[in-house]
Image 1 (cartoon, helix red, strand yellow):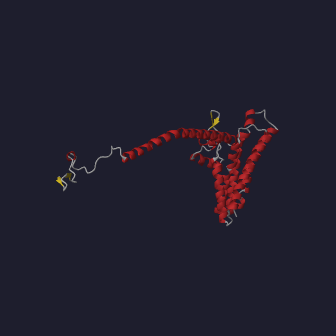
Image 2 (cartoon, rainbow, N blue to C red; image 1 turned 90 degrees about the vertical axis):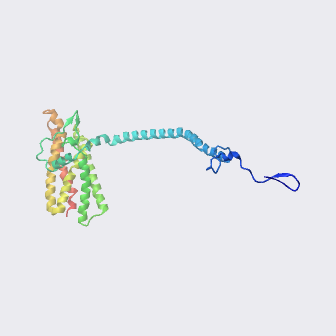
Image 3 (cartoon, rainbow, N blue to C red; image 1 turned 135 degrees about the horizontal axis):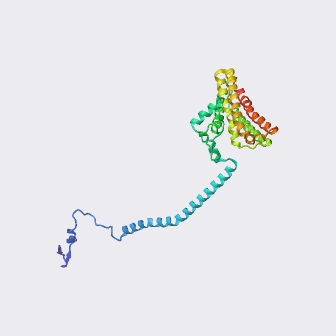
Length: 302
């Protein structure tokens, strides 16, 4: 409302009149909508919107470098793997080792029975399929490395048990026992290889085959030591004597097909001293097994 002051001029009162346009707004709205304004808040939102754009640009710039690094690393890894496989297969034929570990439970049971009771077994020839010997799980006559490896480990554990029952156990002594058995195995295999070379025997026996055949004696050694722990020295000597005779028969019947195969193929042509050397070599390899069995177990039973 206007009023007249003392000077006679009309002044407008400080009371603000309500805008009619505001009367038409929604009754529940208390604040004005400033989301579309270009004020400081709008500027703040636009600044935040620039963040993802900058991150996307950084990702675009870094992706080629990361992809290049990943590709280069993968190529280096593949080249290193190929080089390692090539050099490893030169000294350790990994592909051939898979054949010697292709066993199953049925084969292991039959082979253990054959090592302890070889007297009733008749067919000792290894089966072949397309000039390749079948896997051990399909032929009980095929050599394997599973039984020798497990028998070696079990022999060390049984030796530790025997020493513990006699209050003579120590980690150093058990380590010497394991290393001694391993060294004698290596010496035996090297001696057989040298003998085959000196006698000039053409055979399909490989170094892995000789390791397998030489490792079968640990089964009889385990039986002898366990019998000694249960029944004393008498049980040890009886069990060891049976196992020594069994491994001798097993080695004779197995190796004669390998070492004497050339003489059997040539028939009457190969006779005389060379054939006798092969026979003596077969007998010597078989006779060495009981000697090692006794040498590595007699001190474990008292």
